[in-house]
Image 1 (spheres, helix red, strand yellow):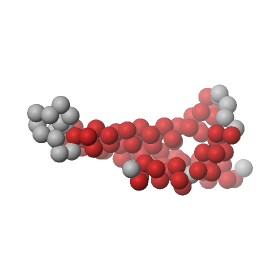
Image 2 (tube, rainbow, N blue to C red):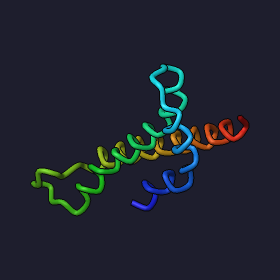
Image 3 (cartoon, rainbow, N blue to C red):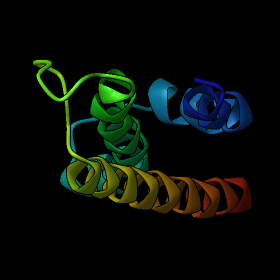
Image 4 (cartoon, rainbow, N blue to C red):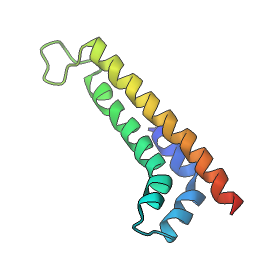
Length: 96
């Protein structure tokens, strides 16, 4: 939960700048909000992992170890890609 909230705390200035100048343009939506979508999707990938931990093999919410690892890898990859793009977006927005 702490890692999910960290980008919102660290990049709150970037969120404020992007939200105050919101417009429906393709380039703006991709460059301004795609990193946040990646962080959100990465965090969402960890939900099935967290739900399935400690469940028995006959539980409805059980995931095999292989599938849990796939969710973990996708979650970590999307989350890190989003954070790296947020860092770059923040640096570019400070330049202007």
